[in-house]
Image (tube, rainbow, N blue to C red; front, side):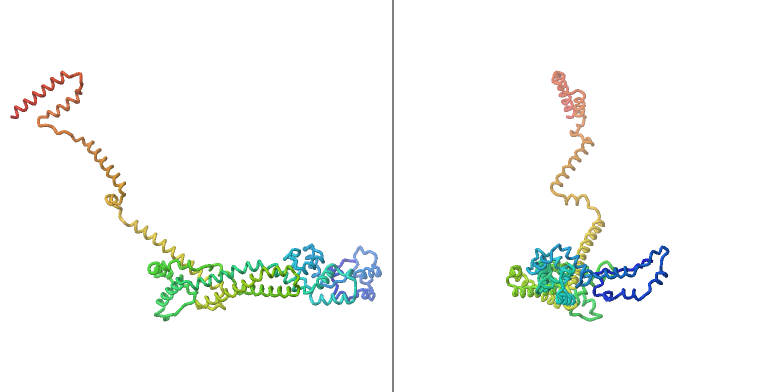
Length: 465
């Protein structure tokens, strides 16, 4: 006979299904299967199947163990228990004593998925009422019975999860609440920001006075429009012009953004979610307090309440302050806190500050470019003006260099240092000295020459007379 390729259910999977009540043996007894074999036999047909053998196999398909929980759920529970690596007794004892050292938070969160359902509790009570032995149950069913016997099981597991997550949650919420408070208060208390908005209002009314009439205020989203309006030459925006005016006429407002704090962090906070988390922590604290009143011998609960009660009160106070501060500042600037979350409100100021800083940089760059262009157009300085601009040391050095140049010039011209007489006698003396240098050994000749010179000067003197 050929093989019928179906997907068969396992014995432990038919419990509670339609197949559990079906009797295929009765069908096999009522039908003549010989014709069926003849019609569907294969070429290598073996001996015909013995109905008795088939009946014996059918009777063996009943599940060996009773299942109280659904098959897939039992399979997932088995995987979870293997992952935890703990016995049933260890798990139940840790839950009773709130022992987070034995049960990790991850394993505890997995176990929460297997809290007994109403149907499973009904099946357990029914099985116990019949007084059937536990050995007939699978390991997962036995765990579920022990699990369901723990008093206030759901409350205990919720408290354990709360105890394990409290510190991390509180440390996550505190900075976000503080950023909302600081951002809201800094914006509302900033005098410079208020004056900047006053200037914006003045420019807006001036532009719209002839068409729309004067306005008493504007929505904060209008600040983005300062970048959209451009001058006639399209070189600057309205914001650039305002920055120039503020720098020239109201320099005390420059750097107004230094008064605003934590806007970037506050702009990422979902205040509604944060406040909901604070309320959830408060509910967990109340549940823990009630459980401690029922079980006042629990040292774990006692130590937790002693260490974290003040932290919870601080969270509640900060949550209330953050809510009030934010609603106050949003209404102060003409917005609706119900429709304007922090993720929308604070980024409007952040965009304006970023654009304002960029406009300041643009204006500074334009000033440098204009100065460079103006310097390139001016004529070069004359040497005399450069001399006046020089330092005293440079000036003295320049004068010394000019004197040396003048002396060199005179030496090249070779001006005579002694003027000649009318008869050329001095020139003759100089020429004689060059041709016959003075020598001490030649005294007689020099003396004779002196006498000759004396006579010469005498004759010359007589003639002149």
